[in-house]
Length: 117
Image (tube, rainbow, N blue to C red; front, side):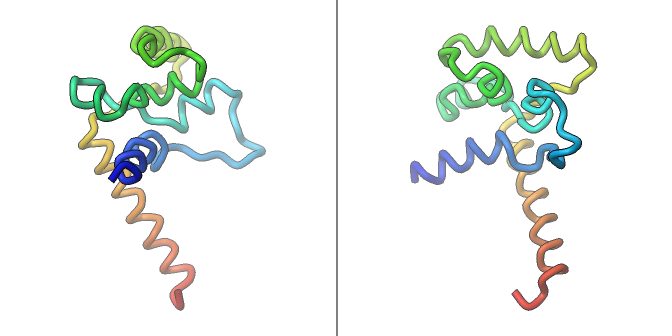
């Protein structure tokens, strides 16, 4: 059960977000912001995710204690707005639906490319 819960938290943070070829990769902070999804915080999400709902902020500042991530969140969010970089955040249900839609899409592509499997 713990593994499933961790997979859900990690999957929400990463699956279905932008990917880049090595030659087109943006600088570090833009890469972290555009390839990661935050989960909109509420009491349940705070408990369930244990701070990893601030995945973007955690990737940018991995040594910041999780109780300070909400402060970092507002700073990073406003910095992204000032620099015209999308800081993506979704509710837990919406984010889960986005992940499942993405996984369905890539699995269908895989079956088309490798029908014998």
